[in-house]
Image (cartoon, rainbow, N blue to C red; front, side, top):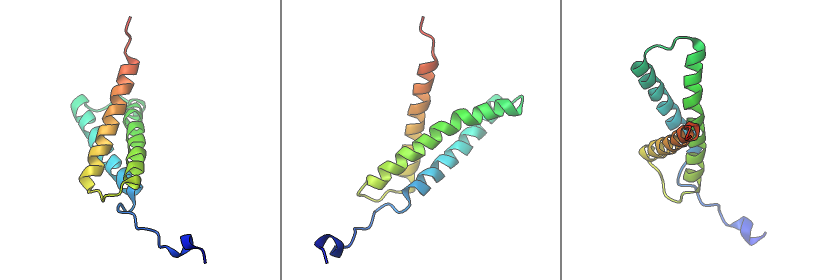
Length: 106
């Protein structure tokens, strides 16, 4: 038996990091959709509502993937609040970069 096989693998401190990060992103997405529809009113059509969902969903999905990767590599256990805060910060960074990219500076 080889020495590498005889050593047990260390347990990861964050169990199911992607499940938790996607749960945090899903909750954040629902709250964002509620706030947008409450602030702007009911969308005119299903197409406009789809655009709103699309603009908010993609940053949430990317943020969940990034957060899951970071949590998976972390050696310390994370609380739910850390997942929520990292997903929120990454989503906001993506939304800000997207808004800056759409501005016309001429």
